[in-house]
Image (cartoon, rainbow, N blue to C red; front, side, top):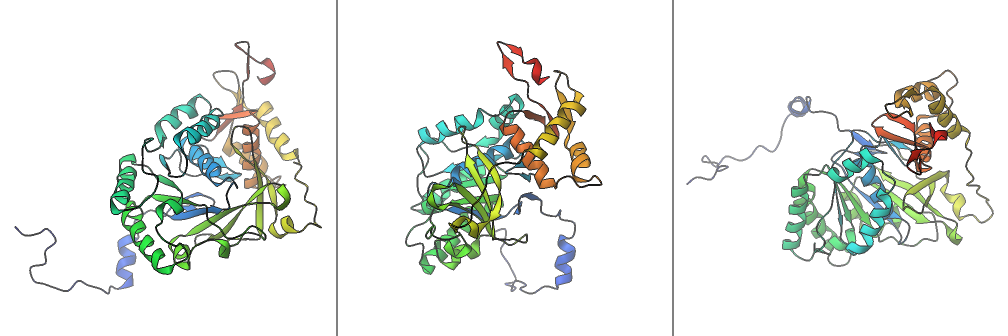
Length: 368
């Protein structure tokens, strides 16, 4: 019986094509979508940083936001949601990660909880904890395929790797396996990398542990670090093949009681390491108050009495107006903070309304 791909004439495969022919072949393919902050649909990238910088928490927050169809995260726009995600945590015990996840989803409204239940997937409690053989790689591949997820989170690269991560030879072996079993899924892949060299200077691309082979395999790296002297944490895009990056900018953040990341503002990364420079993280609530007051006074009444405003209306009012009151990113940051403070909610994509707080089983009249 002949094999399906058998070449009866033993012809050599064509190795060179006219570029114009390939351009025509792919011209009707849709443009890749930017999901969030330079993360392109179908790309593979790293969330990197030292231990206890909040990388896993950040990734979980991002994964939840994608799964429930939020339009913003960390002050930047999310496109194309809701997305089905699978979060493969090879690092922690199920007890620890699900206790943290329980806190995180306590912030979701009723509609978001439904979407979370449908779209946020995870392997079983007894899943592998590290990749030590082809059999383990196959199990990871089977998990990704069974999930039918759009976006795959893996925590962490260390648990995928065998050997010395500084060895180019070992890194080449890893890359080949990673491509065969993970990249071949053609999903959007985000890998958390806990190994990073030092924290005594601003985080940069060359701080990432591993040979250059590792960095060449991934298309972007979002870095996380602790500010010296216990003054907080920050993130910085270290490189990205799809968007222009200013790696001197740091976004300072904190993690609240419900294990959600709260963005505090952007600063020059070098200033965080200069003891002579005083950084003031106190929030100017002017823009946030403008957005809240507008929703409160201009929204149309929804079925349950709250004031509802479309995101397009907010953009027209504050971003595209004659005075350019604020940038689009600033508007999204305001919406994120109002939602974190439980002053507004978004029960449908692109619709924002005042949060109705319940007291003794009745809606608080001050929120209507």
